[in-house]
Image (cartoon, rainbow, N blue to C red):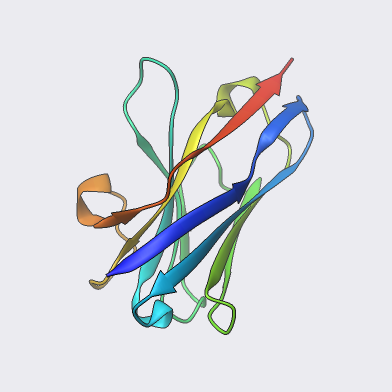
Length: 124
């Protein structure tokens, strides 16, 4: 089992940047694929980005590709999501999640462990 604790987020104007962090404790962190998801009011939780065990493999939603960057530091048991060029439609509660399987899963149902969520608000 792994526990995930998120930090970062907040409010920013359109075009600004924010950085989200996800710190893990518990079992060997490097054995887990980490994903970021987000959920806007009245909408389903959607995939944002994922990173593989070593950090060499990454995947992004079309809506975040080129603006967001996911990274991990296994020595520190941490994953970050750097968000640049933020838009009002990026406003949501963001969650980090972990799964111990293979592949950069995009479905939230593949992830077994979740952070507490953090609010990101982008104003126009």
